[in-house]
Image 1 (tube, rainbow, N blue to C red):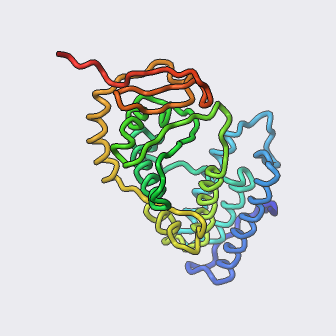
Image 2: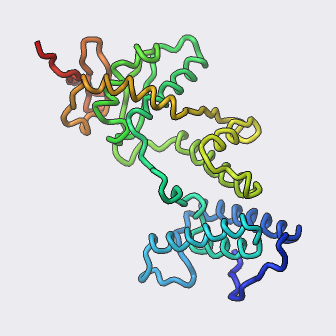
Image 3: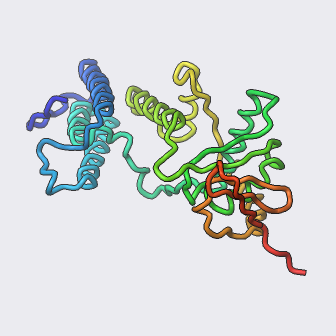
Length: 292
């Protein structure tokens, strides 16, 4: 990336000429190319004019975010010269700043929760069953994140998996810092492709919400080897109403972090294993004792 000069460039008319638009498009293309090269080489985030001993990555990221957002503001107001300048300054500090932008201020950003996992599993199981009508059982493999997967609410959902989705299942958890695979690359491919496509679109047609992201990703020529599905807030609210009744009857399971295999039974219990290949099993009741 060429270093930005110190002189400010002032726009000369309210309507940007085609040369300026071409310059912005060229800058984006070059920026994305250099970003791919940078990611391949695993370069750390640095800045030529910053002392790494004096500045933290968080400070640099916040500065880059501010500059990048200012660039977006300039582009939307038609000031493409200034937009290029702010974009350049931002990506010189943090090359992949476009992927690090937080949600707008005032928006509520939450981690994926247990109900969302169940909503997503409904979509996943329907897709798997559409691939083969002979599928008998689904084996889930995931990390052990307690917010999403390794918790009693997800376990009780697993107990009802056959009833909910019409197919048996069991869940296996990777050890800490293990389990990276093709699924991680799929998500990265989608995000990189969407970010690149959005930057190439006019500012009033850029991808700005989940529905627009889905509409872009669902086009066959954008992600030809990736199947994309969409869930709505209505799906989540409907699941919340049903699952909260279920959760109220379930009880917490102690020491869940030590287990790496969970298999539902039919008697109100789960079979647990410390490791998936172990012959030693533990039985855990998942429902509260009913008062007489």
